[in-house]
Length: 292
Image (tube, rainbow, N blue to C red; front, side):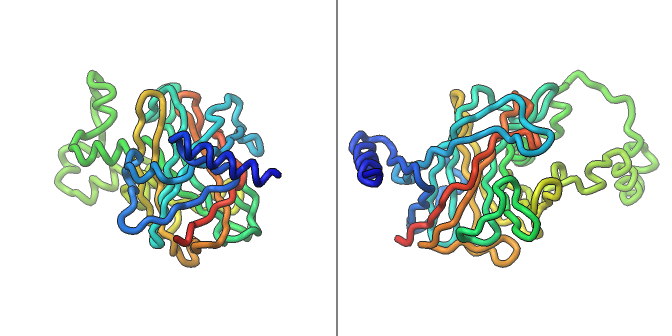
């Protein structure tokens, strides 16, 4: 009876001209040719079924989330047997591109078990010897890339045009004559960059970073960073794409068509100071790549 009602719901949704809703899983529809990896408004998304992923506060480990955020994430997926791309849609009344006083950057992530199948690790960042891989998009990283391409220069100078630093030691005239010495002096005044902090020093220049974890507190960037994505905010809504290859090998895991796996999601609302483990998250959601 339940299955019959589900089929009826899908038919009714299709007949009404709206998206086909699949509440049971995230099905990645197969298409031939190029995927809309950086185009969340592509017409190709119109035929992709939509899964309404319910989100919950991260209340497993400190610092826990106190102020809840996004409760529903609408997920669609497409693949071409080489890559799979997800479109993630959620309501957010404010566009938080960059961290400022009292706010952080908006962000969203997709988590995969390292091994596809039903034996999944803990959905909260995996567990020892049962790792996860995470494709993590941040609005601030996208803004970094767009500013660099447009030649807009330093963000601090743009945010605070009237600020006038008196002197940076690494800009002293004697140091300018020795680039190596100047670079070393600059490192001393940027300890986060010097230490390789992954929040500031990304292995790639795109807006999506690939991470690995085996539980809380050991998240780190993977050695290879195959990823793509793009976010668009309009009228209180984010539409963001995140793409990954199907064949990731031992370091990233491999996704097979026709074989059920699982994925999980996380969303950060910058205005509500969501950052790090303070986030909205989902449990594991069944996921399958259509064979044709």
